[in-house]
Structures are given as C-alpha cells and as structure tokens.
Image: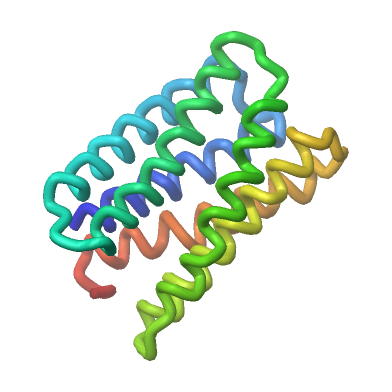
Length: 168
C-alpha cells in the first residue's frame, strides 16, 4: 500500500506543480504540497528501509528519497527565492540515476511494463528540469505539459488504481 500512497501524492504534486509552472498558482502556495509530498515520500522511504530484507528494498528506498529531495528542494526554492539552478543540476543527477530502473522494473505483467515506462518518464521529466533550470533553456510549455502528463499517467491514476485494488 505504500506504493499506492506514494504514487497518489506524487501525481498530486506533479499536477499542481504543472499548474504552478503555468502561472496559475503563486510561488508561496505551491510550497505546501511540495513539503507535504517530500514528508510523505521520506516517511515511505524510511519505512522501506526499515522493512528492507534485500538489495531491492534498499534500492526502492533510495529511489523514493530522490523524489522526496526533489520536492523538498522545490519548496525551499519557492520559500527563499532561489533561481533553481542547483535543483536543475540535481535533476540531471536524478535523471541519470533512475534511468536504469526502467530496465530493472520490466516484467511480463502489465504492472511491470507500466513501472518500466514510468521510470523512463520520470527520468525524462527530470532531464527536462535540468534543461530548463540547470541550463536555462526556455522550454516552459514543454515542461508544463510533461509535468502534467507525467503526474496524471504515472502517479495520480495508477495511485488510485493501486489503492482501489485494481493494480497489484
């Protein structure tokens, strides 16, 4: 169930961050959801670490912390007025780090295919953040669309399906 909770709130934060990036939510308002999801993701990662009995469990906790740090950093930048370049370069690190998960997660089930596609989408999204924040590329429309689509398709909907027992 921890996966369902994490996916639901990752979906929420990505959808709301896309709306914020589109200029529909103020900087100081977007802090709340980013702090909340950073805390939820950190709690889930700690739970995964405590319950880990093998390398896979520790890896899943480490990957979850990458999400938590990202959302915490977004909140910090909004609270302090930082320009996001540091987050952009961290996003490159994360994009490269999570890419192998797209291959590790593959299995012959629908869930395994979805997980692999999700890791590839998350890696791509973090790379887009690197391009915009780290390198200063002016690709805001792409960033908004990619953030929204990734939030709905890899977080919100799968999280709901998982929590309602439709996905394993």
